[in-house]
Length: 279
Ligand SMILES: Nc1ncnc2c1ncn2[C@@H]1O[C@H](COP(=O)(O)OP(=O)(O)OP(=O)(O)O)[C@@H](O)[C@H]1O
Image 1 (cartoon, rainbow, N blue to C red):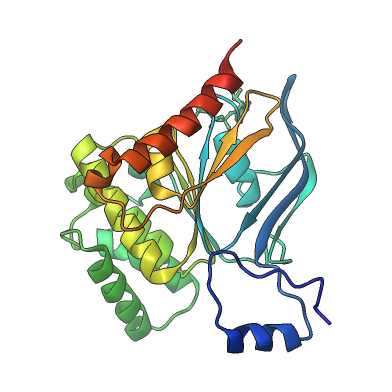
Image 2: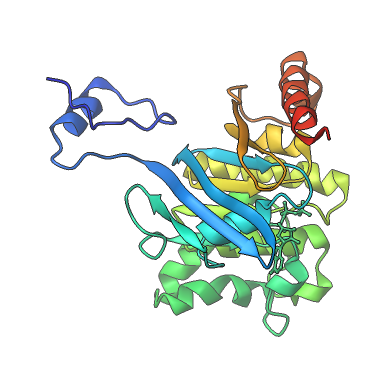
C-alpha cells in the first residue's frame, strides 16, 4: 500500500530505486520548510498574524512584496535572528536550532569584520566550528574557485570593491555548508553590471551545491530570475498573495531576461503585485 505520509521533494527527480528505498524507510521524510501560525507585531503595527507558508527544501525561493510588508522580518524570524511572538518553524521536521543556517546581509560593510583580512573573515566561522586548518583550506579553495570572482584574499575588506566584499560575505556564509542560506537584498547596493554578475555566480553555486536558498528582493526582475518559486506577499497584516513557479531553464543569464517566457512570467508577478497594492 502507498505510504500516505510520504511526500517527495519536488525539486529532486528521484529514480525508481531511490523512491523504493524512501518508501521502505521507517521515518517519513517531508523535506519542507513549514511555517505555521506565525505572529509578529511591533508596538501597534501587526506585521504577521496567523501566517502560514510551506516551501520545499532544496530549491531557490524569492520573497517579494510591497515596502514594509515584512520581508526582512520574515526571514529574520525563520532564520532565528529575531524572536516570533507566536508560531512554529520546522525544517524537514527539525527546529531552527537543529538546522544549519547561514545569512547574508544587505550591508556587507557592516557584516564583514574590518580588522580581519578577507581570508580571515572566511576562515572565521569554520574556526568556530573547530574544523582543522587543512580541511578549512580545502573547502575555501573549492568555493572560491566555484564562485569565480577575482579577489585579493589578503586584502582588508575596505580596500575591496562592493561586489568583492559581498562575494566574501557570501563565501563566508557558504563555507559552513549551510542547509539553508538566507539572503536579504544582497545585491541592492551594487551597480547593475556587478548585480548581474553576482546573480549568475550565485545561481552557479546553487546549481552545484543545491543549498536551499531564500532571497528577499525588492527587485522583481531579480526575484523572478533567481527563483524556482516566487512568494508574493500582500500589504500588512501580511499574507501570501500567490506563489508563482519558475521552471525556466537555468542558468538564467542577463540575456534570458529579455526572453518572451521571462517577460511573461515577470508580468504575471507584477499583475499580482499591483492587484495587492492597489488601494
Ligand atoms: N525592530 C523593529 N522595531 C519596530 N518596527 C520594526 C522593526 N523591524 C521592522 N519593523 C517594522 O515592521 C514592518 C516590516 O518591516 P520589514 O523591514 O520586515 O519590511 P520589508 O518588507 O523588508 O521592508 P522594505 O521593503 O522596506 O525592505 C515595517 O513597518 C517596519 O517599520
